[in-house]
Image 1 (cartoon, one colour):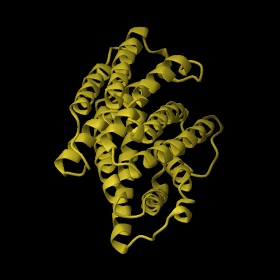
Image 2: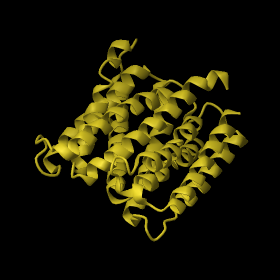
Image 3: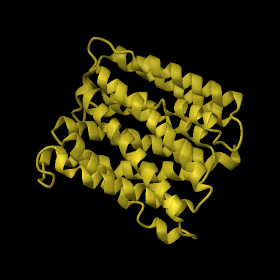
Image 4: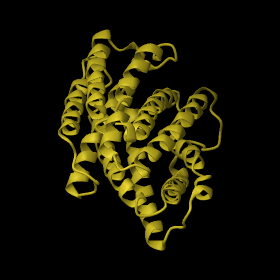
Length: 295
């Protein structure tokens, strides 16, 4: 546990920051910030957080690994877009925990493509199973919830895409300079985001007072969580275990919605107490998975 303590803490912190970003982003979307517009601004802020990375690198990347970085960056961009679209269509306390199913996909891809340094332990597989069950418990809607089948499918697909990304990143960073490769990955995310500006909703640069304050507030923790999680999986070869800790974002999203949802004016803050309690129970299973992973 001691040698893996840094990536676990980084992943746990990333999960909390992501949940903060998700509820703020959802509030901005409800006020009309625009889904693609919010995605572009969020990704540009996130990409800028990685600008110092080349100065920390010890070696330059070969042309081959530059290409790998761009491919991984596109995979991140595609996954991120699915996550934003799912948030627009459904409750943040539903969609965020669903996207927390990523450890399942990471574990499958690590084993399927033989990407891990060591075999996954039994406790890790049990933790992955608990995550699966918690997702089913959290995701079952009631009559009052804002359930969207397309949103659910996009959240699951986004989780699978991010799972593939997180299983590949440590494999490539340990064959190259991690600082430089992560810079290429997230720099390309910014470039891909700029390309979709013509398709964003309304005027991209016009300030929208009610919506943009939430959009900009959400971009800050989104950038922070990207740094934490990229370090957790890019510098350590524990992608499955780190993602179980990161799945704690499901717990944090339910807590934050229950505590702050009504205060910030989030529509799902008015969800029934029974629904929030059930989602909280499912999210707590994620914490049990975290305990199993760290024991």
